[in-house]
Length: 436
Image (tube, rainbow, N blue to C red; front, top):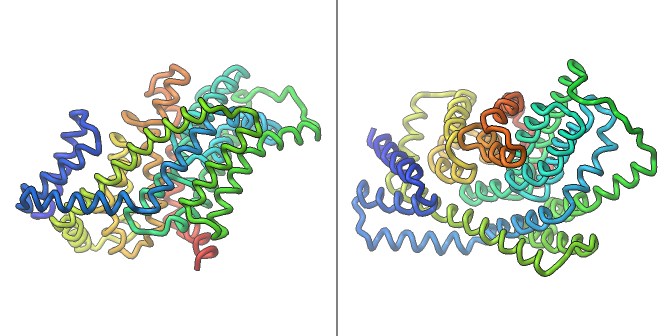
């Protein structure tokens, strides 16, 4: 019971500071220090020593270098016409499917997610092209915005993913294995989304206007050329990781270099563009890394208070099956997703939920994929759904309406979680093949 009271106090303080609008990393640092002082009775000097050791240890973690590199690569792509090329390149290949260009949302987000690592960047970059084009051509707005909101979250799951790196660092799990584990679940969810679009288009053909263009072999060749930049980056980054040539951090640096070379080849490189992308990457990276360090301090504080172990022991005495534990944790993360972003959810909850999962015999790599899919759900749930905010800014539609459009894809992602529970090899097979 003491552990539950301590956990309640910590959570109450966290939500108090978040509600006050305090920067997340400042709030986490203060809550961690206050918890150690009030509950554990530590003095200021000892708390400061603990904090300094954590800041030094995590700030010098090599894996952390991948975060600014992947963000910088995404910034470079975002400020070029590669997203336009993705839309043009995919058009001939989806024109024969029921739903036609609606599939460009799903496939475009899948491809862009494979080089950006960010949900927000994926939704914004693909959305700035497809929302206007699909609207101009008369496609169903609800299905267009809903599929984009759902598929935009692929930036969290399809490697290289910044959130995966955060999870891997905090859970001390191989980031390369996590990247491999995210491939098949990402493809599975993309397939579910496209299958739903096909189903809707068959049942109600008017959601997608009839094709007014037939593409010949020459146009297919031109479309492939348009897709070459994004395909090249995917091959460079993921190939370097899965072949063992480079670590995720090294592959991220190679990806940045590749992105710069591509912008030079496309004649879109300029010094001012390079500076803008670098500044954008610095701001985003500083935010994420500072939250990560503060969350490590919170995790250590909770360890001193014995909160994770005692709560894990208490829940263990309930003798929940692994499946029932996953149901409870899914509901828990759905609630957190209503208010927090993905990185904050992971860093704040992992000290409690990961020991529970390990005690239940759940593979930490599989749990990371499950956690990321549940975090994806938070991207399309109001009131704090970042993909909803992005689409609101792109289209002017109210957040509530966009959330309603995204509801079918929310349900499909819940179905994907069920499939992962029933068939865990969807996530674990590829890491086993590559690294065992």
